[in-house]
Length: 102
Image (cartoon, rainbow, N blue to C red; front, side, top):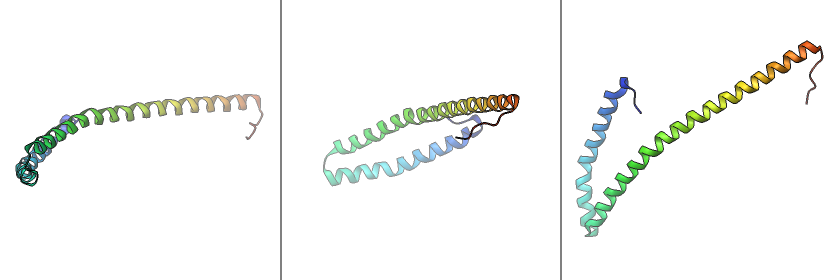
């Protein structure tokens, strides 16, 4: 996901995000318990965030792969169209007739 040249910056960003979560998470969990008087909400919310991060680890690379695939298909289609256009222009030049405009 990250090239070796950008690895140190990405790892620093990861640690910064973890630091913010570690700083804000416990007081928020305490507030949520004080508000609801139930620990299951705190743990359910933590589990929800972990599940969301797991889904993002699957979805983001899949979207990147799909974009790359669609760009490759688009380039192949453009090359085929250009080849057909070039062949038509060669045929027109060889026959000496003008193509009919549609």
